[in-house]
Length: 442
Image (cartoon, rainbow, N blue to C red; front, side, top):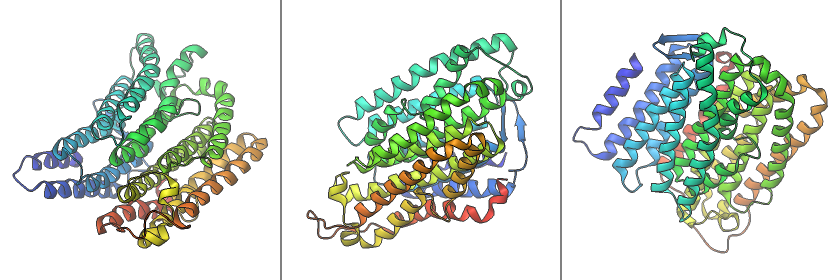
């Protein structure tokens, strides 16, 4: 109830005759206030809370909603230089409401509806504020790729409604439902594309390259979590189907993580490297989820939050370099220690968090994910060893290449405004401070 009143207050404030920057910072502060308010409710221990007419919260959606509010607070702080400022702000507020409704949904059809509407908005954001001339191609690629694989999901949902008479998560979780393998693949393929699973990740790389900085922050931090959260909800309902198919998806996810980690070494575009790193983490998450253990669900939940904060911060950080050099190529942006010395600390903090160094939440989540996979099959230890080694190496390679070396193109550049450091610290502080109070998740 308090959240709804706060959202109404925030939207009504936008129509008052104030300076647009005042409105922007008001909305941003409201996001942080709402996230702290939800933290103070301390409802992590409850299975279902605030149930009312197909809307409610459970253990897994609670933390993700707090992360959504936090990320959107940072997004609103970062859009003050964008063209068509008012339209951009209104679209982002609409997207925020749709994403909140998505994670509040307790009905599968309603979840699907908000799931698809959020893609329409990110499609328009890339079309309107994209960075390159290929943004139209990338946005259509995103739309057709995701909608094509979502249509089988809609057909299976209609079949389930005809079979069960309801699509409520609460009702379906209380039943033991088993589908044949074809229908089951139709059901999960829409979520696997959104995660995205290896071999279905091409749309994400193109979308990230052409998306504006706030589009990349939302896409990496929140929209990828729609796929993993949807898969998590389905695992509660179709437990038997997931057990039967688990070995195939675990192998695909682990092999995909190793192959893409190796592929990161040959990237020259910083944005593609960070996007590929994002796919690597999500494939490890998917592999662990298919072990169907309580530890894997907890590790996946922590990884969703940690990955959201870390990848969003990295995209914002490399955008600061892009604004100064007007290039995403690593060879042009190297030597940050020389031409942007005060920004080199932020590069170290974000890259170390990305490689799961202590004391980031990534470390805890990866430990849980690796433990669940080794409990499922001890022979996976060899693949997991190579995954850990290579993922550490490409993060270190990325950091050392950007920070060190001699830049022949620039002698010195602006190290950015104070608000840039504030946004980056607001990514890094919760990512590393949450390890001090893991009791709220366990």
